Length: 125
Length: 169
Image (cartoon, rainbow over all chains, first blue to last red; front, side, top):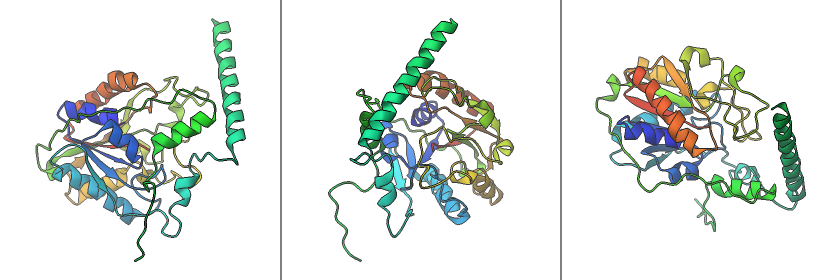
C-alpha cells in the first residue's frame, strides 16, 4: 500500500496513509502518515466510536494541507486499552515456549499442503 | 504521573514480529520488506474544500476473494467500485490483522466513507469521489509497483482526484 502511495506522489498526486503498522510504512517511506497505535484492523478508530473516527480522519485531512516535507508522521493521541495497553502488543504473533512446538508443526503442515497443491496442479497439466 | 521507562520501543515492530513468527514456523528466509531512503512529495495544489478526495483500501468484495488461494499466489487484482456498494462492509478475513483483539464489522474503522462524506457535507473537503479503489496486499513488490500502483493512478486520474487517502488494514 505504501508503494502505491509513493507511485501516486511521484505522479504529482498528494496522499496520506492512515495505518497502525508504523515500522512497515516508515521503512517503505511515505509523504504523510497518520499513525494510530492500535491493534491492526482499525486504523481509523475503534468500532462504533464515531467521534474518534472523525478525529483521526480529520487529522489525515489536516496533514494533507499542512505537511511541507515527506516522511511527516503524526501519531494520534488515542490509546487502545488504558489499563493494559501492552497485552495486545505482546499477544500478537507471540512466540514463546508455550507455542514454539505448535508453530513448528503448523509450518510443516502448511508446507506439506502447499506441496500437495502444487503437485495436483502439475497433474492437471 | 509516574515516569514510565522502557528497555524496548513501545510500539509494535511488525517487521520483527513477523520475522520471528514465520521463523518459528520453519521459514528460514525472512520476508524482504520495502525500504526506501528517498521519499517523493506532492503538495496540495488547491484548497482542501475544493478537492475531490479518493480512498484506497486493502479489503475486497467477498465474491472476488479466492479463499483457497495460497498466500502470494496473486489471484487478486486492483479494482474500483462505488462507495455506496461498500457500505455493507468488505471482506478482509484473509488479511493480516489482530483478529483476537478487534473486529472489522464497522466499515469506518478501516475505510472512512461515512466520515469523509460528513466532512464533505461540512465543506471541509470538496467531495469524496464516488468510487473507491482496492489494492491487493501482495508479497511481490514488483506486482505492487508495476501492476497495481499504475492501475490505481489510472483510476485516480479517471476520477480527477486531487488527493488520495490510503488505508492499509
